[in-house]
Amino acid sequence: QVQLVESGGGFVQAGGSLKLSCEASPNFAGAASLGWYRQAPGQEREEVASIGMQGPISYADSVKGRFTLSGEPGKKWLYLTMSNLKPEDTAVYYCNLNFPGASYWGQGTQVTVSS
Image (cartoon, rainbow, N blue to C red):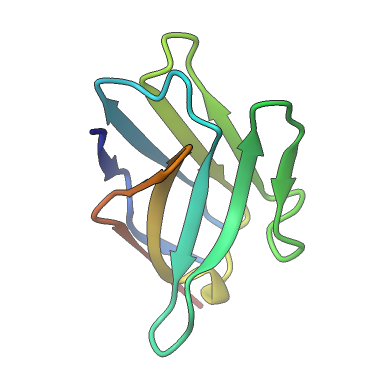
């Protein structure tokens, strides 16, 4: 069982930056894949960035060049660094870890970008 807790969301003006954090308990060692998803009101949840065991990192076209997925060597923290934010980036952002036979999600963190 893995618990995920996201943080770092907030309200920012267009062009601004935010860094989202995801803490995994106990850790995400051994995960088959991990990444970030988002869901805007009235829309389906979509993948923002992810990485499998063999890499490389995959980004949604809408965020390429603006968002960066990273993690820390202890395999406990996963980050999403977001820059040049746009109003269309407004959504609840979720951390996701996948193991063989199991998928885990955090509770989400709200990101609101004003124009």
